[in-house]
Structure formats: structure tokens, C-alpha cells
Image (cartoon, rainbow over all chains, first blue to last red; front, side, top):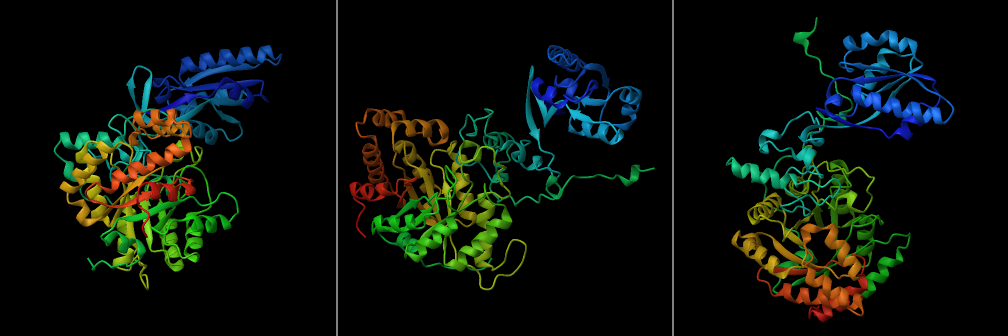
Amino acid sequence: MIVGSRKPIPELKRVLARHKKVLFAGCGTCVTVCLAGGEREVGITAYALRMARKLDGNPLEIEQVTIERQCENEFIQDVAAAVERNEAILSFACGAGVQALAERFPQKPVYAALNTQFLGILEEQAVWTEKCLGCGDCVLSDFGGVCPVTRCAKRMLNGPCGGSTEERCEVADPERPCAWQLIYKRLEAIGQLDNLERVYPAKDWRPSWHAGARKIVREEHRV
Amino acid sequence: MTTPMEVKNQLSQALRAQRLAITAECLPPRGADGAAVKRFVASLPKAVSAVVVAENHEEIRACALSCADLLLKEKVEPILPLVVRDRNRIALQSDVLGAALLGVTNVLCLSGDHQSLGVCPQAAGAFDVDPIQLLQALRAMRDDGVLPGGERLTPAPALFLGAVVHPYLRPMKLNVLQAKKKVAAGAQFLFTHPLWDVAAFVEWMNAMRDAGIPEKAHIVASVRPLASAEQAEALQKRHKADGIPDALLARMRKASAPANEGIALCAELAAKAKDIQGIRGIHVLSAGREDAVAPILEQAGLTRA
């Protein structure tokens, strides 16, 4: 899923400073699950900002709504009337959702309430870890299902660097295991250590973001 | 594959000779002071065959290539690091071709300390290719006269190719796999991370010998002078994989003149390294303490030219 975190209240307060009436739009998909931009977080943020603005003697009127999927026009349509009633939108969706709203409502200012961070998984209660960069040319089959492109801080494709220990990666923040130790263990467990013997070729980054923002057209499904 | 081009320079000849090869590290100046390189050369012991010009190792300095050129002008043979952290494959290829124009023949392929550990935590890392992929590309540039994209090079650059190896990387089986891969990709000489824990280093050298690595590539043991107990602590904390033993830290803490103690300690480690079977050279990784190179070599009994 897409994982994000809510921006600090002072930053949101600064961003909304020029407005008196704002629509807070949560998203019911990934960011609800990662406890960053769902109905609950919209409510808490609205409460905090309302209070902060009241203390400044410059009250902010907030309307709250949560769209089931902000990255799809079909769902965005449902809030057109609410958008019309407000000066601006504070979107609690991922970066895709924020931009979908901005494209759909060209005359309305749209602001981001979250920092969108990564494609990851729920590791344990309230802990998420990054697993995929969306590089467009998946290498997982060669590395025992552990992604070196995402999980090695140096994106090395031919084994660990000198900062690897069996416990962790030398890059300290956040603390995490060395991806190459995980790859080694996995390949050993599944009898595929020979994958590490040949030199893995330099990656073609064109399918990744490096050739600019990507677009997918599936002709067979076009109408 | 084409027959490898044999490059005969000071470093390759010293590594093939009976005696140990000696190399040292020089940090390019930070300010616009080209004369700093001249001063370094004047202090350099005759025993040193080649000098590694550090590339933005722990802080931003003048680029290694310009410093390598200044060394060549002073008749000192440089070893140019190619750091995949700072350059994508376009810049790496171009720098190697530029280095060849200047007469640089030794290159050392490495990933570089991750930028977030100190040099510039806010920077994006290039990490377009890894050091093994780079070695393979450079070997093809030299032996086949082609760039990775297929463009022909006339003439091909003469390159003596080096890589960095990690004596403390465990499990040992993974370590051996890595060293073998670096050699297979084209590494002709291997510089180790600094020697701190002698027992772990010897255990690693035994594994290297069992894998036949010293017959295929010259292994050069690095030693690094510690400047103070604080620096030793910071290094221990930052580079957990390099494992500075607590005993060394304690010795630095107890020393009344820590800078001198660091030199003495470094010389002791160099003296131990030279007796380890399979070691072909000693590299004094000065890390900015260029003035320490001469006393370290002297105290380690490595001064003969």
C-alpha cells in the first residue's frame, strides 16, 4: 500500500493562512489503513487547526469529507458540490490523490496534508516499512524476493557494501537490516546462492522514474 | 574475451615485486590551495609507490581528478577513486577517459561512504551502477576498446583496476563470494578496509587464500592513524562493520599524546599486516593526516625505497 504521514500542524496552518473556509478531504483507501489521512485523521487535524486559528482570532471554517478513493475521478465527482461551497481543499490523500483533485477542480487551490512516503507493508501494529520503489523492471525473482533496489541504501545489485553487518545496515536512520544479508539468507534457504555468482548487469533506469513521469495505456481495455 | 591489456606502472610493478608495495592516501585540499599538494609530495617518503587521492570521503574537498593531475606533475603516481555515490555512469565513463588523457592509469572502484553518514546528508546519491558493474565496464573499455554503449575507443585507455574488500564482512561465505566476484569483474588489486581487529583480519585472509584470491589479485592491507579517542569513538559508532575493537579505543583514551599514540598504533598494525601471508602491500589511509605517513612507515620498518 501507499504509506504517508501527516504534515505538522504549524505547516498546515501556514499553508491555509489565506483562507477562511476550507474543505478537508480524507481518502478511504491506503492512507486510511496507514492511519494518516482517513476520516479519523481528518477529524483530529480539523479540531487542532480550528483551535489554532480561533486562538489567533482568525477563525477557520472547516467542512470534512472522506472520499472512498481520491485517485479516481468517479469517486471525486461525489464531492463536487462541497468543493464549490469552499474556498480551497486540504487533501489528506497521497500525492496522486492531491493531484487528481487539482486536475479535477482547476479553479480551486488544493493543498497537501500528508507527506507521501513509500510503497510498503504493515510490519507490526503501527509500523510500516518500505518494500518497493516502483522501478518498472522488477528484479525480485533474482534476489529471493528481497528488493536490493529499494532496500539497499546504495541500490547495489551485486552484493553488500562495506557497511553491512549481519545485524544491520550502516546507514543509521532508520535502523534496518542490510538488504544483502537478507538476500543472502533467502537465497541460501531456497538453494539459489548461484544467483549471486554472476555479475548482475547495470540497471536500465528508463522503465523507472528517470525518464520522467510514467504512463500506462492498456489498449485491449480501451473503449 | 580479448586478452587483458597489461599495464606497467609503478603500482603494478611494486605489487608484482618481491617486496611489499607501499601506498598512501592524500586528501585533496578544501580551499583553493594547489600548493598543498606540493607540500604533501615534499613530505612523502620515497617508499611510497602510488598515492590514493581521496574523493569526498568524509567531507567535500577538491575533486580527486584535479588532485591526481597535480600529483602527476610532481612525478607522483596517483590512484584515482571512482565513487559510484557521486557519479552516474555517464560521469564515471567520462572521468575515466579524462583521467586517461592526463596519464592516470590506476583506478579504484568503490561505492563510497553513504552520503547520509557525513559528507552531505541532504544530497541524493547517484548509485546508478555499483562498483562491480563499473569494474566490468572499465575492463571492457580497456581490453575491448568499447564503452558499455558499444562506442569504440581509439586508443583504449590503459587502466590498472582496483576494488575495495571488506575483511570483517560476515558470513565469510558471503565475503568470499564478493571478493571472487570483484576479481571476476576485473579487479587486479584489492584495498582492504582499515585493519583494526587483527584476529578477524587473519581469519579473513585465510579464507581469501583458500579461495585462491591472492593468486588473481594483489591484496593491499589498509591501516589508518587515529587522531584522538573522540575520533576513534565516532568511527566505531559510524562504521560498525569495521569493528574498531574496544581495546584500541581504551588505548587511545589512556594516551597522554593521542595523536602520537594513533601513529604508534597504526605502525604496529602495519607491522603486523606485513607479516600476514598473502598481503602484497600496505596502504596508509591517512584520512587527512598526511604528515603521519612518514613516521608510520618508519616505526613499522617500511621505509626502504
